[in-house]
Amino acid sequence: MPAPALPPELTLPQLNTLVSEVRSYQLTHGSLINTHPHSTFSPPTTHLSFPTAHPVGASLFPSAYPRSQFDRAQKLQHIFNELYAAVACDEVWLEGVLRPLIETDELGGGCGECGRR
Image (cartoon, rainbow, N blue to C red):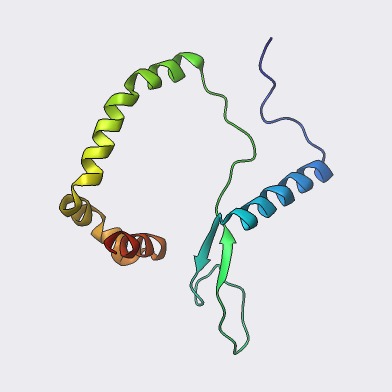
């Protein structure tokens, strides 16, 4: 049986319902990015200061991926796991490589701060 076409054809009401359900899921499962009060993502506020957030990017449908490439990736997975573990354990190297991002990117900076704790 052939795989269904992606993305499927949706009516505008179906698409709006799907987007609404994905956003609702993100809100209830913490898939949000806290935005800085002076960030371009934040809505204008009154004199009150309160945290603002927006949902992270999400894909509504899976991307078609050739089976042969999936099988190839699975065969390489153990090599990737070893590399990932080696990088994660070398905190001095990781800090040096990520320093420019941590200093200039709000999300990166927050992640860097969290990692140092």
